[in-house]
Image (cartoon, rainbow, N blue to C red; front, side):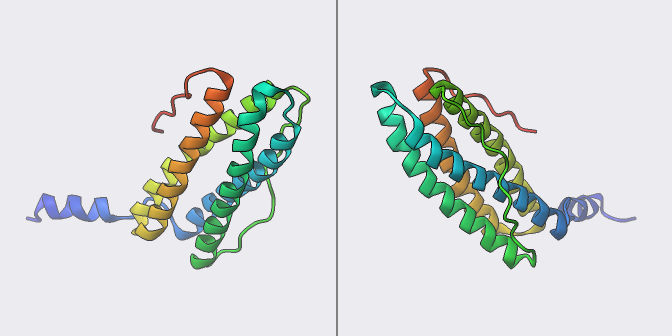
Length: 162
């Protein structure tokens, strides 16, 4: 009779995602990064009023960080044998500062959840280097969440494990 521990270990080691699916998910992440770059560039310049000057400067920094994220994600897509896409998700444009900041906060919250899932997917495939890079991106995305929630005067939205 087979040892059930060995059988369980083999089951746990089987990837729950294919290489192609991981490439697809990373390309979705890349589209969100492009969206964030565009939004942060526009919002950092469009926010008006003394109460938004601090967050406007912070958004300029975020734009640069998001560009670095996009480069890392693109590098990993290429490493996995895929082609990085060039399509951003739509950016909310508004004359209202709060609406822009809220759209950013919602996008960052969604992104945090997606990157948490990506770390699990990478580890399931044994792609530990990619998982480490995504953890670093995730840490910065959570900082962006904090900055935006603070500017809006509210708590950081909870991101549940999916």
